[in-house]
Amino acid sequence: MSQQGISPPSAAEGRPELGVTGWVEGLGVDPARGTAQQDKGNTRMELPPDAYILDDQKDTFALRGNKYNTEGAKAMVEVNQYRMTKFDFSKDIHQYDVIVSPDTGVKSALMKKIWQHESTKQALQKYMYQKWIFDGRKLAWAPCLVDKSEIRFTVDLDEGKKSPDGPSRNTNQFFIVLRATTQVQISAIRGYLDRKVQFNTS
Image (cartoon, rainbow, N blue to C red):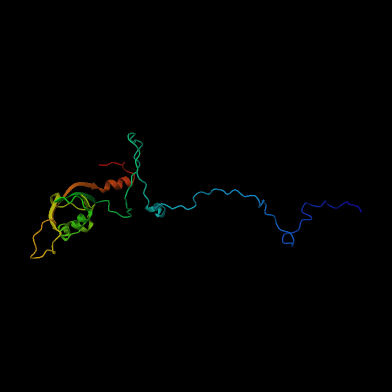
């Protein structure tokens, strides 16, 4: 028979079609040999708090310049901070020294009782006591300046607890002095955040 006009068989001829019983598609790899697993590293990552802040709430701080101190060694600094989304930058903050007599030795629990005592609240009532911030040691901050830059009052922690017939004690009576020392210009912070002024401690 003449072979003229008949094309040669293709390489695919004789190969069973997929799905035909008795033939299985190959894996493409040797299952007897282990496959190298690619190291993907740490796939569990915790995003920083800033990742959850909207772009219009983020601030880019002004640069300090390229003048760095070459003395000493690097040190780890921990900062306790709170993000503010609203603030009145037109007002100033006044810093006060907190002087307690007799000296409490900076006992935090005792200082907290003194600061939260009714006598302290009454003494600072007209100076917006609820907006004062006390560090629990020797400093306080307020949005206003007290008269003559100083205020004095007495706190008796035994007030209302004394027995009429009991002995008189002065151990829980404290003389408090709040003395204005520094005025923080918040407008300077606004300028720093707006990249209009360089960082400074003035």
